[in-house]
Length: 333
Image 1 (tube, rainbow, N blue to C red):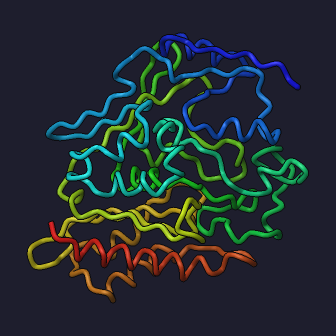
Image 2 (cartoon, rainbow, N blue to C red):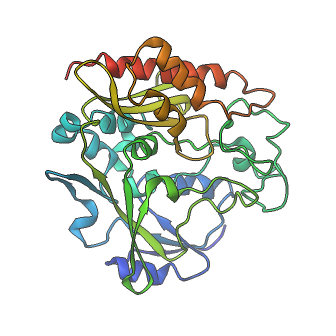
């Protein structure tokens, strides 16, 4: 048994100082961290609990005329149940309600939700010596292993682990920004699609956050595409399960059915929350028909690279996106 130091700092500034310890990790509400510690993937000896930070802005949900701001300590369940947000942008509560179990959603915070680690079996089983995320430079057992769940977009020869979230696909589609605070009180505003780093040659570096930096909230600019938004998640079972493929779509239709603006995020198929900009370009200024939706899906997966067990994700991902687009197009708003 390893000794563990537990800290519950009262302010973000104190928490950031606590994170300067090389053995410190952030503890939030869910919490995936305990799972990873139990299986020895994380072996930290110092937990910095951020759920008791005494700043009401961190847990606040604020909707005004131009933006939706979600504090990093807001609970998934509270945001999912927010009636005004549901009326403005159905995609947000839909993506939250399809992520995790109700018990976890009651406790998990938005800040930690986007930073959840991969569900790659080779990452989570320390008996496998090849995992570049866990042991940089050791190799990737998934490349030629059982890779049914793994990514087909954004992969590299060093890692094909899939990003597991649901809500982050909505943030990617909605062009959200991430607010952070770091050393010396320095604040940053980061485009959400820049937060996670594709694996490249360094898959152990998963985000652009610095070690002593905390997410404080997300800002989503309101726009005409929000009303017509939808999240579709395909999984092995209808109860709690991670996505095999998912699509977060939001778009603005003119009166004649022509797409003025389209936003698409894909999940279950990529190494990071994936913004399908090529597919968006196919839709823009065209009437959304089944054929155009299929063209957009083909564009979204044009760069997909499947392995021995996950080739099915290419047609499944395309079908998921087509279904999501046609469902959103048929919404009565």
